[in-house]
Amino acid sequence: MVIGHECAGVIEKVGSEVKTLVPGDRVALEPGISCWRCDHCKGGRYNLCPEMKFFATPPVHGSLANQVVHPADLCFKLPDNVSLEEGAMCEPLSVGVHACRRANIGPETNVLIMGAGPIGLVTMLAARAFGAPRIVIVDVDDYRLSVAKEIGADNIVKVSTNLQDIAEEVEKIQKAMGTGIDVSFDCAGLNKTMSTALGATCAGGKVCLVGMGHHEMTVPLTPAAVREVDVVGVFRYKNTWPLCLELLRSGKIDVKPLVTHRFGFSQKEVEEAFETSARGGTAIKVMFNL
Image (cartoon, rainbow, N blue to C red; front, side, top):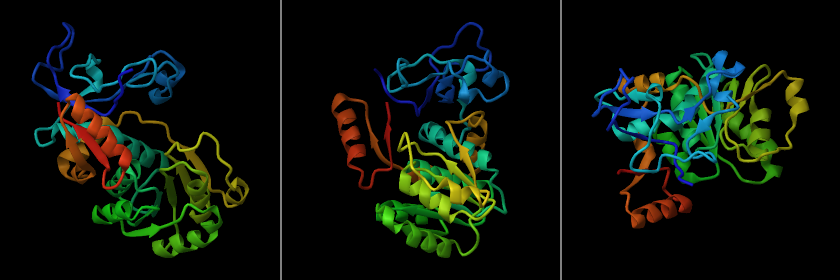
């Protein structure tokens, strides 16, 4: 199966009924094709469509290819000052934008982010663009925390992988925030990160589960429930590409620092790219340029 779902490219050919695009247009592609007939689609929450055909989700092939055929309404023209690389980054950025919408992030929302991987970092960028005045980001990796600090985190906290450290680390995180944590985004989706987020968030706040690290988790829901901490699910995104492109065009978000490695599309380079990504280290986003 062909993988890949974060992409942008140049239009080579359009169907006879396509009026909005012409060959030569540079576009970013939203990778999910919904049915537009089910109740979720009709209600505007097409990301929940049970018939969704999504790049690189079996049995649908992905976009790691020289050419793909895709609906015109899911191909979004890039502004002149937005590169193809930035266009491809609209996909992960969309996850962060959708999460911020789900959490109602605004100028009075102090934000905690669990996980400084690619999704944690784009969620941080989105939260700042939505007006969050203070953002603390947490991870086990020094390098990723340093990147988070460089691109705008107000404070960073290094934690362990040990469940026994949660209580101590919650205090450390709250101290780093310096005020109440209104919304926490768990961008890892692990027992420890979710438990930490639930413990650190203030009464009446929200915890958004963005990452999907564990299929099932054992977390302290009852203590969170008696403090009326809401748990909000986040699945992909909906209607985010126009906003992402505007945030990139205006300079309110800069995703360029997240693209750490670039490769061509030969067999050798593709293998090297996947090996680079698997090693971790300084790799955040690995980009193919065809």
